[in-house]
Image 1 (cartoon, one colour):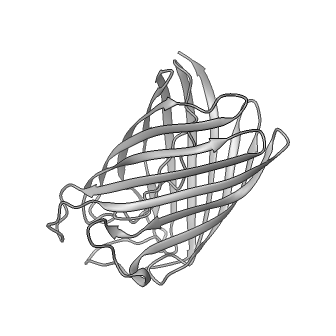
Image 2 (cartoon, rainbow, N blue to C red; image 1 turned 90 degrees about the vertical axis):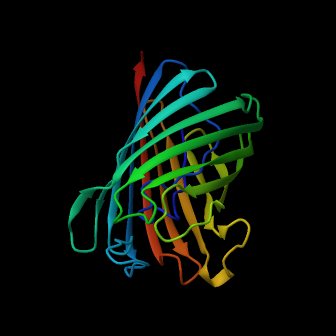
Image 3 (cartoon, rainbow, N blue to C red; image 1 turned 180 degrees about the vertical axis):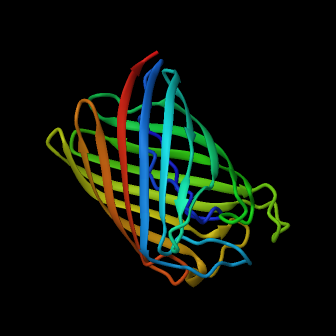
Length: 249
C-alpha cells in the first residue's frame, strides 16, 4: 500500500494516507480508490481562482504495480467536485516507492522512501508542477503498528513564491490490531511550511484522524474522520481507501 499526504501546496488533498512499508509483490497489480470529502472546511482561496477543499469531494483511482520485490510504481488520477457541484479532472500523479528494509513476518522495523511527481490544474495548486517525497520508518508486529513519514514538497513552478526551499509535511500513525481483520488507530498529518522558516503555529496545518481498517484476503479498506486543529486547516474531513488486488502479470 502506498501513501501520500498531499495536504499542502496542492490544496485539493486527493490522497490522504500514511505509508507503512507494505508494497505490491513483484508482478502484482493492485487498484485502489481514494475518496475524501470536506463537509466543513476552508472555501476562500489564497489567490484568485483557487478552488479549496471546503464543501468538495475528491475521488482518486490508483493503479500500482510491483516492479521489483522492493520497488513499486503507482499512477493516480484525481477527480474533484467543488462546493458548487462542478466536476473536474484535477491532474495526474506518478509515484515510485522503494522499501529496502521490510518488517519481517514475526514483527520488526521497516524503512523506505517514496517520491511523487504531480501535474495539477492551476485552480487546485499555486504550483502546477510539484515534487513530493521523503522517508518513512516504523515498527509493525502482531499487536501494534507505528509509522512516521517525513516528506518534503517542492513547488517547481510556483507563481507566487520564488523560494526553492521545500515545505515540510510530517505524518504519523499509531494503530492496534484486533485479530486478523480489524485495526483501530490514529493518523496525524501536518504541514508546517518551508523548512528554513516554518509558518507560525496558527498558520500551519494539523489534522488528526480516528481510523478503522478492515482487511480481507481479497480486499481491504481504510476509513477515517479527521478534525482540523488550526484555523488554516479544514474543520472536518472524511476519508476512505479501498484496496483490491487484481492479480500477477
